[in-house]
Length: 112
Image (tube, rainbow, N blue to C red; front, top):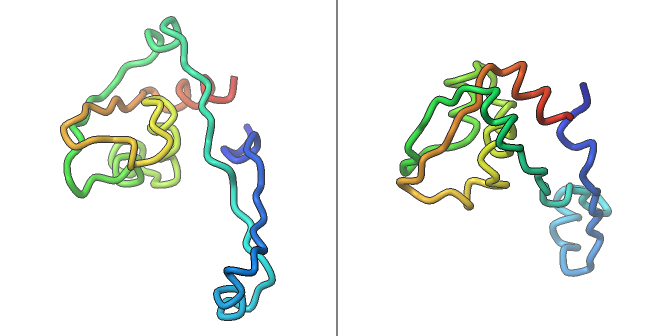
């Protein structure tokens, strides 16, 4: 199984505007990943999973939900993908978030 960054582009920022930051960090540039572009999950695949539902509230974080439902904070991206919400800023207070289960089946669908 690959990692979630396999299909994402890398962006290197060496812009002069950040020279002071680079100097403080003792680096010449900063490399990051492009924003995730999610493939949609089909209706058929959604029916092959069960969902736990969570109403998003102030203070919620995807990593906290991953810890609560999967026991692993690093799986926050699976909840993000399933709900088609690339970042927490895409989720509004009061919105219902679905937590896909079983975990192994959800991960297989992501990498398909």
